[in-house]
Length: 165
Image (cartoon, rainbow, N blue to C red; front, side):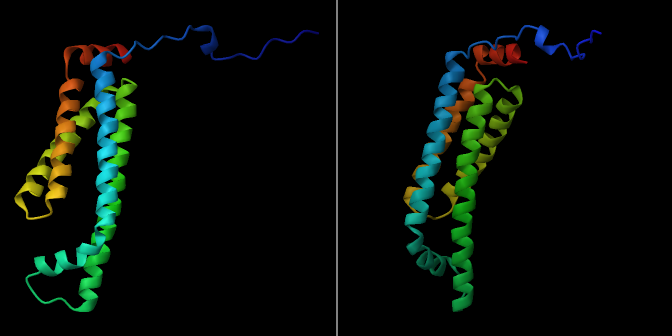
């Protein structure tokens, strides 16, 4: 008695298509995204290191006298904001670096939207009075995002995304 082999989907019979090598513009954009993640991490560390000055900044920015409870709540919210936004920022840079490096065309669009949001954030940061160190990080992060955006929308990058589909 002979048995027939169990039917398969046949996927092992198809040759695997090789992904095209990323052009220099994509490689450089990915490197810049990792630089952006590093800047975000450094900004996060500086934000945590300067949390001691948060109380005075809240008092100075307040238009009314705050009770001890209100001041404590504002400090907790400020620290939570630093932590949450810092981790999200680092994560977004790394996610975009990996997705764009893999040739995911949607990732280029998402990176463009994130850059637009970063531009609005920079305008907001420049307009409000805050520490010069924070503004420097914001400007450096925006410049990295600008470089990434330019590199991702070059002609050779567009061809890479089209071939990776």
